[in-house]
Amino acid sequence: MKILPVEKIREADAYTIAHEPVKSVDLMERAAAKCYKWLKKRIDSERPVKIFCGPGNNGGDGLVIARLMSQVNSNVSAYIIRYSDKYSDDFQINFDRLKEATVNCIDLNDGDDLPGIDQEDVVIDAIFGSGLSKPVKGLPARVIRHINASQALIVAIDMPSGLFCDEHTDIKNGVVIQADYTLSFQFPKLAFMFPENDKLVGEWEILDIGLDAEFVRRVDTKNLFLCRKTIAALLKPRTKFSHKGHYGHALLIAGSYGKMGASVLASEACLRSGVGLLHTHTPSKGYTVIQTAVSEAMVSIDPDEDCFSTVPELGLFTAIGIGPGIGFSAKTKNALKLLIQNATVPILFDADALTILGENKTWIPFIPKNSVFTPHPKEFERLVGKAKNDFHRNELQREFCLKNNAYVVLKGAHTSICDPDGSCYFNSTGNPGMATAGSGDVLTGLILGFLAQKYHPRDACLLGVYLHGLAGDLAAEKMGMESMIAGDIIKNIGKALKKF
Image (cartoon, rainbow, N blue to C red):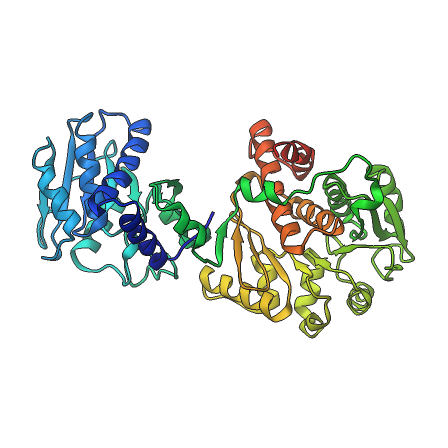
């Protein structure tokens, strides 16, 4: 699913109006009707509804919702925030239509007392929507603060008022609605993807309002939201006469004294990806652990008892993964440098390997092209420096990929996968139960397995991230989020793949 910037969304609206054809006010009616249907399913018709409307098209959406809700709810109030004498044409049309409905319509002017908002009220934010380009001040800011101070359920239409779609919002210089739900028209917004906006956006849903499908298909964007259809198209079917040699040979360098669990988890996940063969390189003391816990894996034994110290022969392998639990000994750092110098296939760097690279950034230009980095935000910060905010971090992620011809999987609630052409894919699966020890090791194993099967590095990342999250969702359904452990994710990888 495409994530379009505001100007492209406006183009999609205009193209639909011209080519469907449909009047703009009728497109507004269609969009607001989708909101009304969503609200009707989820909100008791006895609850008072207070709709706050600005003078633009977002306010027009609010007026349509007020009119439609008044058909099933006798306690609907629309508050018109009169901070400007200019109104959009479609707002004015729907304001005139509202006179025929049983809706309490109240003007709010600068200096007026603001209406009381009770805990049982439902507040609908239709003040600004997605077109905002500067911080909110004056009367609208006072209204937003008043709404946020209430204990009411808050539903934002298209965007929480005061929040920018495509850039960082400095809440110190303005105010933003703190929505419980945001109903976004047709597309997710880039702002939804970042943790800094979570408490402002709340839970968000996409409402298909029938914008022109051909325009949506043709429009270019660098931001995409991963969906099931995309992933299904990537998976390669197995042929009747295939054998393990057709599905790649992975080398996983993982584990050290006291950290062999990371090696076990990553090895199990790699095998569940469908890889043909896996060698797990481990300190000699870890031999028994791997051979016992992951009997399907072959073991490459390091001469050092406690850590990764020596690069094995690399000629067998179609992809290499390194990092989970390897530690930070001087021997390990030197061996990682030698691995970078000698590898000719993509390397996946995770966990401790990323920390070592953060201390030795001069090694990065020598890493094989099309390699993959899977940091969490702190690990990424060690690679590129501190980001000012989440939008800036995303810019740094794209720049790193472009500069190093690499792929970065930045882990989080909407894990982002950036590729060297600057495209960024945000994941749609996963849940907070996956914030548990070893979850990242499982992701490493999955992506490594797809890399070894010679999936394109971008596709290996997309498959690994999406299926990792989906397996986590399946585990949460059974175990509950609080009780989930990383092993539960592995147990559900097969079920996740069967969904396709």
